Image (cartoon, rainbow, N blue to C red; front, side, top):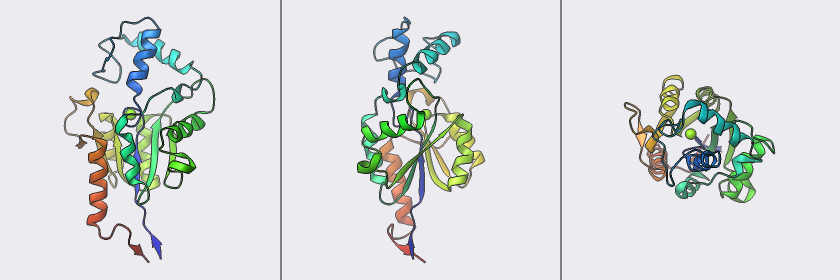
Length: 211
Ligand SMILES: [Mg+2]
């Protein structure tokens, strides 16, 4: 007899972590005119930065000691804890090593501080996988047998939907993906959690043991 814990994969930046706001701060510190409250319309900040300026900001961000600890969580990310207990959650992120501590430590420490990881907040129910490029997420989804995945990058979601068809990949509504068409979406993390839990319940007793 064993309990089934379906696998759910969740992107971090733009989903759980407010990367855009932190990156805008970096851009301002580099002297670029990024307005307060700026919300990017695409993932390259192309309405306020040239590609060369974007690259410079990336270098500046990666030079910050433990940069990934300096990003704020989105306020609604705590609702993801409603998956703990009935699912195995993989935080699936494509990130680069910044100055400071090893990237994996930064990610895991950040999750702990955000009350989404660590012994107290979810180590029993979640783990972290870091890939080098977003498209590599599809191979991970297949390897871990993920049933659900949420990400904020339309290209990634489409790629994963095509390459990991056993997993239901969903795009989280964000201003920078508003123009993407033909990609299955959720409006919020709360909706994602409700959808995943409802699908689990529809399969039968969510806590049922199977032999
Ligand atoms: Mg993302």
